[in-house]
Image 1 (cartoon, rainbow, N blue to C red):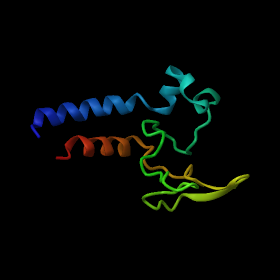
Image 2: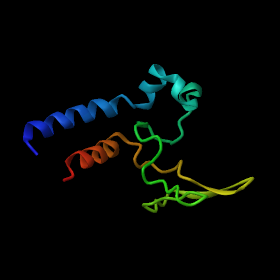
Image 3: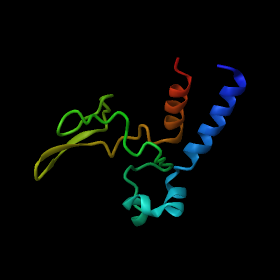
Image 4: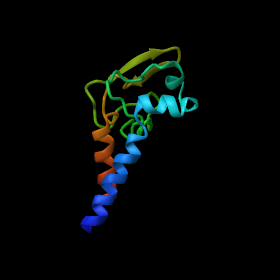
Length: 110
């Protein structure tokens, strides 16, 4: 990839992901998420980034969900209809650097 193209992608990726900072998003788009409206984070992270609101590693191919990368922070919790995988203690990919790295990897593949 041409160096100028890579620099442009990196800058625009940083700008895009920066728009999904929890603190910024709850002020600019409170209608998007009940967490924004109630000022309650779904993950206990100081700098929560909501770009990947639905984690790309959440396994929806099974009824109770799961984690494709086997995060040690996930656990199954009981519900009235069985169990469901809870990954709220996991920080991946909800930190700005993780989201940035995932997007840059997608941009530079091939």
